[in-house]
Image (cartoon, rainbow, N blue to C red; front, top):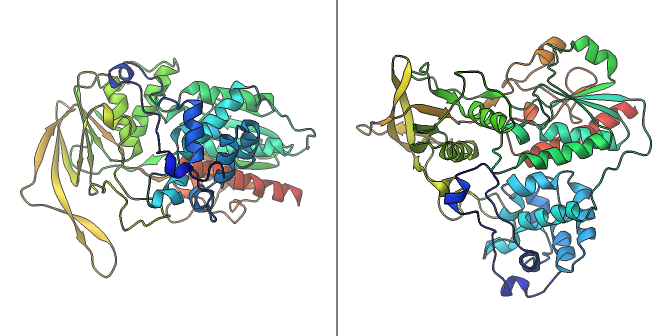
Length: 475
């Protein structure tokens, strides 16, 4: 371990954010960086546990966290980078946006604040880029096998990177104008600046991955063309069908799905043209966000930057506790209230709120009608369900309502339909242990198969399915 008494001598330190009054004026990254000396102190807090739950129970990628921390504390940065890249192809993404599952299962977190693992990993990968240690590594030998990856989000990039490194000829098809998927279009730039995405894409291109953007399979390219040119196909289109809210007045103008709102803002920042009348602009308006998760938080931060008059975020679930809930004992990911940088910028959060209807005038939203709920046990260990509290109704004026209630499936996909791939009861593609669908040679990875989840889990699934593709093509 780096320092035997480090966890006793040093307290956890987070980098903090740029001043609120400054960061609300732009979409630049809000999180600051720890200095190198501060990173060394945080690495020194690692106890080098006998059973390191941080990379066994916490991290889906199984990053060897204690070894990384020790190498950093001892100044062996290049070794730390090599260790990190053995398990993780894109640390620069998760070190900025991951909720740090590893920290939730840190042993030090049982009685103190956990080690700042995410900040240490960010320091490692950025040190690698700054020192010029990270550069293109094209495969020494190329195989004749060609693989198409449809979708360029985290799962698609992970699969493409791995297969390319194994020598396969990889082409990534993306229907947007630029690659990156949710990393580019779904996550706000103030959390993940797009130069970070561009930097990785450029590196992958140097290594031989071909990106074809603005292409939708089934519309621009036929499935016959795809199957005729490639030995295997990996589908990584993500979970695209958002959960809707079927209440009176849903048809009013001003009600949008959260991801449509976030994608549009990122497209604007990328310099793309938005059709006249289609722009969702919160400037001077009251915005109600329905959904209390990360997507809702991202909407809050975006609306604040657009100059919203007021932002309200409603969640139907109860307010989480401020400390770890007994229902999620260590080393499980703790249930507790988390306030993002956006929550610290303004707006108002309310819990146990249900939406009953939308009311408008001349077809445009003017009011959101809500009520308070209480959660009542359904009995026999089947959990609980919300029940409206009589007389708790209230009305909120609003010109924009954003639905941020998660996703219910991958949505309609022309390629999937054309290939006749079997779906499960939820509409997700069935696959075997290697990730292959009901159609031989067609694989699926990420949210398109598992349902909406974290970027780090999508990356892990992309790596696993890439291994399945290699096994199939080696047969």
